[in-house]
Image (cartoon, rainbow, N blue to C red; front, side, top):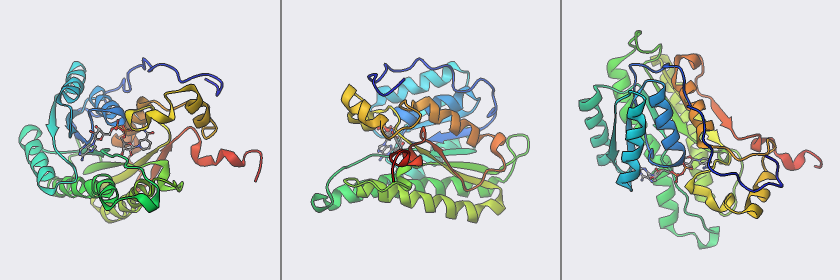
Length: 284
Ligand code: NAD
């Protein structure tokens, strides 16, 4: 794919995981009925984990993800909960303890944008993004860590007492005018993740983040749906193609597995080189 071509059709990607590196593990993925979270949930299932598919709207889409996970032999169910609600998050984890008995992997992925120029941004737009993208990660991590600490390491399952993967963004690094609420939430996730990692590593809990670049999902259709938009986007992506949700899912499976057992407090950028500041390749 080069920048003179329009956006390709949805990929028919090969399976994200071909080895059952997560057999016996229990995972919760938030915002798992669309885009990146959907691919991550299916990928974790292909890797052998049982998966809770969290979502907040669109029952049918969540059920379809559950069906897809079950095809790989893993257990799965959908659970509707708003990650910014303390009560709903607590109830979601209580149900998971009843259904699956424990949690080994949390992928805090739910997120959204409410874009506006700063001078026109409402407090509601600010609060919605911070509450879901950042506070939601705190609420889910707190619940997961309580269970990780209670249970500790089970060596036959994993070398770690638990793994948390925070879905961040290249905008934890790259300032983003017109999106100050979103960029602030992702900047917050960076230090939430690193501080949790520092605090919890002695308990053998691994906390890491993935920072996607431009991934083809419903959150950013305006950035890739037309040829003009896609070509403009490619000026920001040295690798010359948009990312697919499966690119993120493969990273998530690795970060959740013992293959990354010595990876603690790291942000893995999966961005086709977007954070290499390609505008400086010929100038600056
Ligand atoms: P998406 O819109 O396809 O998916 C977002 C998911 O979050 C949906 O399932 C939605 O239902 C869920 N969600 C929203 N509010 C929620 C709430 N209150 N409670 C529970 N779930 C809720 O978008 P996506 O691109 O798949 O985004 C997933 C994550 O990846 C987000 O955190 C986003 O910031 C991040 N991200 C995406 C890109 C990209 O290019 N697509 C780039 C960087 C980071």
